[in-house]
Length: 88
Image (cartoon, rainbow, N blue to C red):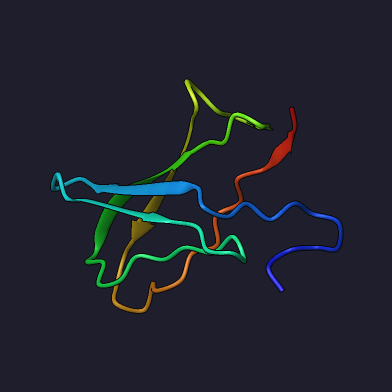
Protein backbone atom coordinates (compact mmCIF):
# COMPACT_ATOMS: atom_id res chain seq x y z
CA UNK A 1 0.00 0.00 0.00
CA UNK A 2 1.12 3.57 -0.65
CA UNK A 3 -0.42 4.71 2.63
CA UNK A 4 0.24 3.83 6.24
CA UNK A 5 -2.65 2.91 8.51
CA UNK A 6 -4.50 6.02 9.63
CA UNK A 7 -3.30 8.26 6.81
CA UNK A 8 -5.90 10.24 4.89
CA UNK A 9 -6.36 9.28 1.24
CA UNK A 10 -7.08 12.25 -1.01
CA UNK A 11 -9.20 11.43 -4.02
CA UNK A 12 -10.67 13.69 -6.66
CA UNK A 13 -7.89 16.27 -6.37
CA UNK A 14 -6.57 17.85 -9.56
CA UNK A 15 -2.93 17.19 -10.43
CA UNK A 16 -1.31 19.23 -13.21
CA UNK A 17 1.91 18.37 -15.01
CA UNK A 18 3.87 20.94 -16.96
CA UNK A 19 7.11 20.45 -18.85
CA UNK A 20 9.99 22.70 -19.81
CA UNK A 21 8.77 22.47 -23.41
CA UNK A 22 5.46 24.13 -22.36
CA UNK A 23 3.63 20.79 -22.45
CA UNK A 24 0.70 20.50 -20.05
CA UNK A 25 -1.47 17.65 -18.82
CA UNK A 26 -4.04 17.34 -16.06
CA UNK A 27 -5.59 14.42 -14.19
CA UNK A 28 -7.26 13.67 -10.85
CA UNK A 29 -6.35 11.38 -7.98
CA UNK A 30 -8.40 8.18 -7.92
CA UNK A 31 -10.19 6.65 -4.93
CA UNK A 32 -6.84 5.33 -3.68
CA UNK A 33 -5.24 8.78 -3.99
CA UNK A 34 -3.16 7.66 -6.98
CA UNK A 35 -2.61 9.53 -10.25
CA UNK A 36 -0.38 8.97 -13.24
CA UNK A 37 0.81 10.54 -16.47
CA UNK A 38 1.74 8.35 -19.41
CA UNK A 39 4.31 8.76 -22.18
CA UNK A 40 6.61 11.27 -20.52
CA UNK A 41 9.80 12.08 -22.38
CA UNK A 42 13.20 12.78 -20.83
CA UNK A 43 13.15 16.25 -19.27
CA UNK A 44 12.19 18.41 -16.33
CA UNK A 45 8.61 18.67 -15.09
CA UNK A 46 6.57 20.40 -12.42
CA UNK A 47 3.80 18.44 -10.71
CA UNK A 48 1.21 20.70 -9.11
CA UNK A 49 -1.44 19.43 -6.72
CA UNK A 50 -4.48 21.71 -6.50
CA UNK A 51 -5.34 21.44 -2.83
CA UNK A 52 -8.61 20.80 -1.05
CA UNK A 53 -9.60 23.66 1.29
CA UNK A 54 -10.55 21.14 4.01
CA UNK A 55 -6.89 20.26 4.46
CA UNK A 56 -3.66 22.16 4.97
CA UNK A 57 -0.89 20.84 2.79
CA UNK A 58 2.63 21.63 3.91
CA UNK A 59 4.49 23.87 1.47
CA UNK A 60 1.26 24.98 -0.21
CA UNK A 61 1.16 28.40 -1.79
CA UNK A 62 -2.16 29.90 -2.90
CA UNK A 63 -3.86 26.51 -2.80
CA UNK A 64 -1.18 24.70 -4.84
CA UNK A 65 1.68 22.41 -3.84
CA UNK A 66 4.35 22.06 -6.53
CA UNK A 67 7.11 19.47 -6.78
CA UNK A 68 9.85 19.21 -9.42
CA UNK A 69 10.86 15.95 -11.08
CA UNK A 70 13.47 15.07 -13.68
CA UNK A 71 13.30 12.12 -16.04
CA UNK A 72 16.89 11.49 -17.05
CA UNK A 73 16.56 8.38 -19.21
CA UNK A 74 14.07 5.83 -20.46
CA UNK A 75 14.29 3.78 -17.24
CA UNK A 76 12.81 6.60 -15.10
CA UNK A 77 9.18 5.57 -15.15
CA UNK A 78 7.65 5.80 -11.68
CA UNK A 79 7.80 8.61 -9.18
CA UNK A 80 6.11 8.57 -5.80
CA UNK A 81 5.61 12.15 -4.74
CA UNK A 82 4.66 12.81 -1.15
CA UNK A 83 2.32 15.76 -0.62
CA UNK A 84 2.16 15.84 3.21
CA UNK A 85 -1.07 17.25 4.64
CA UNK A 86 -2.85 17.82 7.91
CA UNK A 87 -6.46 18.36 8.88
CA UNK A 88 -7.22 22.05 8.70
